[in-house]
Length: 247
Image (cartoon, rainbow, N blue to C red; front, side, top):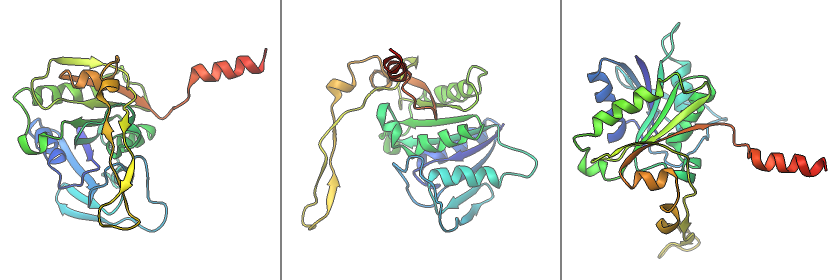
């Protein structure tokens, strides 16, 4: 397959380089178009003023002075003339993207933008410990399964898959909804920096891990698979509003 690789950690990041080497070893054609610097939590932001610079790093790697979504749009717009990638992969992110964290994630935002444009798209994330400790013996097996699932005919047009793969000792796969990831804490004054504030949220795992959601099962060592789309409509509330209006 022809695969476009993007991320929000930067073209140099361990995660995207790991996926690149894995895909090449499986015979796929891979091109990286990723941010020149880290753009974590960029969500679906894009550059609407000014220009974007696409810098060639090597034969199949390009760095963009922009957001993850900029990289998707530019990567697709400058793909080989007359062809298109079979799949867009965003990641692997060094850190999970579970529950409501997906709203802020540049990894998810990039994959969602590709899906909106009609491409098969997959956001991949894993434990932050992957950066220092690397993957377990079973990681590549599940990485391959994630890509196979993304190419399934069961995934409709304009829908992406958000997949979180535990670093090691994976028990299996859970097809599961996103949850509400709760953090306790907020912006606090930075030490010795007047009028500056730092985000200092702590996960409330008692809430996060007590429901039938992705967050719980990832931390029980399952690979979680959640289809996401651009449609954020709350249909239950929409029906209630319509019914109340027409009583």
